[in-house]
Image (cartoon, rainbow, N blue to C red):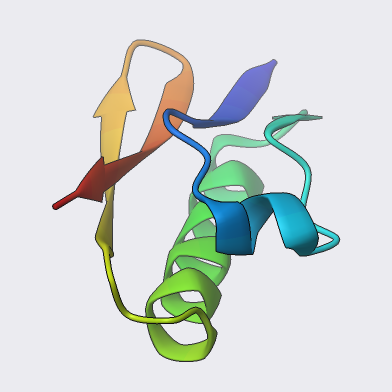
Length: 66
């Protein structure tokens, strides 16, 4: 099992319909979903923050950079 975790949730994230913790069976599927979420957050949110994806063990962490 591979998890996608949103490390810090800004107001835009809380107002969105995205989930903070998602579990997937496939590593590739989890990676693609985390990249898709990161791109949506960077392109559609208010742009006060920049988001990146990092891999730690079986987790893909979406981190907020100021």
